[in-house]
Amino acid sequence: MLRAAWILLMGFAALPGAASAADCRQITYADNDYSICSVDLTTEKLQLFLYDPNGAPYGHFGTLDNALSEQGKQLGFAMNAGMYHDDRAPVGHYVENGKELQRVISTDGPGNFGLLPNGVFCLRDGRADVFETKSFLAKKPTCRYATQSGPMLVIDGALHPRFLRDGTSRFIRNGVGTTTDGQTAVFAISDNKVTFHEFGSLFRDHLKLPNALYFDGNISRLRAPALGRNDVGFSALGPIIGVVKDTE
Image (cartoon, rainbow, N blue to C red; front, side, top):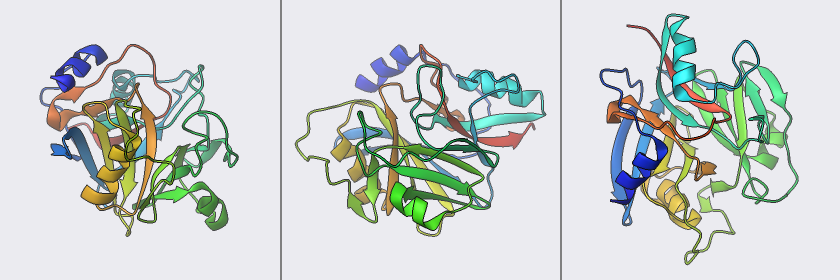
């Protein structure tokens, strides 16, 4: 019931016959419902998107898909990917196709982004990694695409130290975790409101991922053609991550 009500609120639209380009499924874990999409970085083309060629934010999955169709491509799985300001500019580090649009923010601050430790999701050729921000600055990986968000959900197998088992703050939440070998990125969105502790535990204890990063809450949206799901929402998004395929 909660999931159905939330999808109605978000402006759900079906995607009959669309390519999925990700292994998406629905699960129940610890009495909460989630939609999970796994992307194989060795076979799939995963990219970040923010601005169109005219400098305007894409804002919506449909707008991005329409733009890709003009290039003979299509958008498969997609999700909002990081926090943004009112003008849709990224709050933290952001790299798109090798171009840095926002530097790394390493200091604490208000809101979830500033709840240190936060982290960076980094895409390189054939792999994806979630780095805690200080580790990212120390290792200096060359990311073709990167987005910074926070807080970290899982850090080297441990939950974020500020997460409380009996926490009461509940929202729809989404995030990403990566396998140790970097070959798989696993994206998750809750289909009912969950706490940070519950969401982090999903990545650590059920998905068994050593590092995971929170993307956002409340505005969280998913495009998953394999599930017939395309969250529309009432406002434009900032960074979007998605799998791109050639039009069949």
